[in-house]
Image 1 (cartoon, rainbow, N blue to C red):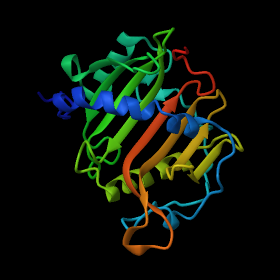
Image 2 (cartoon, rainbow, N blue to C red; image 1 turned 120 degrees about the vertical axis):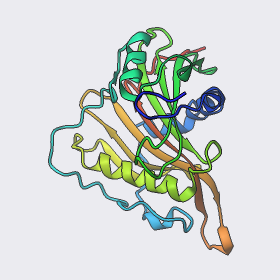
Image 3 (cartoon, rainbow, N blue to C red; image 1 turned 30 degrees about the vertical axis):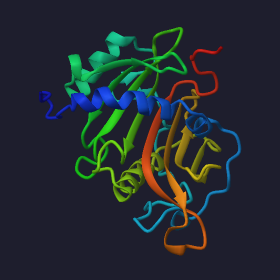
Length: 248
């Protein structure tokens, strides 16, 4: 099955990815990345990763002049849309319909999720398959977040080097947007060794977080611990401070 926009959905992957990735993005890692609590000081990109390449825009945000960023969703999908509206947006953006759109539920947050698998979503050439998860509110059943994940375990094309290249491309894009003062962070090291490549909040409180995670160790007898990337996560969230999720 090939979509009318040229994307080839992998239906087996679409069925297999959600359970693992939904668990990944529902942990405290993403919640911490979206929170605007104080972070560890920014560090040099070359000090973060093993020798597989480094982001091209490390450390400091230097946004170019432009209109204030508005994070209203992902492509044609807008926060507040119902399932039918999001399905139409998926069809418009990627030409995917029917069984190419997987339906599931986050087991922790009890939020309905639509998932698609897309090839070369970010760069158009080098990145591997990405899973795009459209997350709906537990009570409202309206679109409240979009999580996009690239993982080495799910596609060998998502190598550590490629994940860094894709992360660098996205980081540079977000740095060019104009966010309110004090509402951005880059290359912030988290306690588990993951790195927030970029985080920004628009005037409405909508948030984007781009983080890279992987195994932390000391390769080849290195003096300091470094991370070998295995996953890149891009999350757009309507209300990170008060998400519409199940609370026991």
